[in-house]
Image: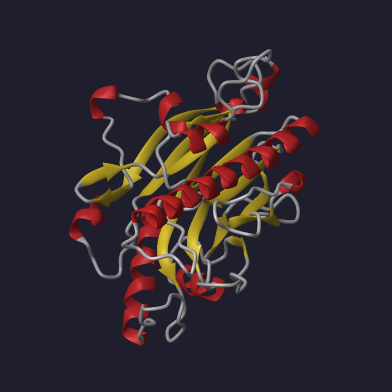
Length: 326
C-alpha cells in the first residue's frame, strides 16, 4: 500500500530558556515572552503536521521539549539533538530533529569536518576544522520497512564574520569579513557534501536533507551540497534535488514560495533536498515528491513570538513494495 510521509524544515529563531543569555546585547526571554514563543511554535508545528521536522537555532533542547509538550500531535515524538557547546566568542545555536517515524539507529551529531578538512580563512591564524553549526544525522524507519537517512543543517549566514581587531567602518575589514563568511558557508557545504558522498559510497540509501542553507537553491554553496556538475557518472548518481523543482504537483504559475524577508526582498533560504530515490526519472525511485508548501503568512505580520523564517513542508508518497518490485 502507498504511504505518504511529510518532511519539514523549521528555523525557530533563537529558542532558549527564559533567563538564559544566548547572544551578547540581546536580553534573555522573560517568563511571559518564553510562554508566548513556545505557544506559537507549538501551534505552528501542529499546522505543519509533518512526520519529520528538522529544526535550526536551538539554544536549548529542554526548551524544544517544552514546545513539543504543548503540541497536540508531537508530545510522544522521537527527539534527537544536543545543546550548543561554548566556543570562543558568541554561543552558536544547534539543530534538532523530531520524528513520528521510529529511529532506525543511533543519531550522530557531526561537529568536525570530514576527511580532516582544514580550510584557511583570510587574516585568521587557525584554519576551519569544524562545521559552523553541527550537522545532525538520524536514520529513520520507513513505513514500508526500509530505512532513510535524514540530515539537519544550518549553514553560516551571509553576515560578515568579524575578527576582534576589525572595525565595521573600514572597507578593507568589511570586505575580508564578508569573504570569510562566504568561505565558512562554502566549507559547511563541502563538509556536508563529503558526509553524503561517503555515506552513498558505502551503501545506496534514500536521503533527505532539511535545513536553513542561508542561500537560495541556485547558489554555489547549495549546489555543492546537491552534487551538481558531476562528470562521468549518471546524471542522478549521488546527487540531491530541490524538492520544489521535482514535485509532481508543481504549478509554475503559483510558484510563490519564500521563507525569509530582508530589506524588502522575498528570499528562499530554507530547503528540503532529496536523493534520487524520490526523483521521477530514477530507476531506483521508491517514492515521489507530491507537493511542496510554504507556511510564511506570519512573516509579514512580524509577530514578536514568531520565527523570522517561513517553514518548508514536503509531501512524499512512497510507492510501496508492490510498485518497487513491479
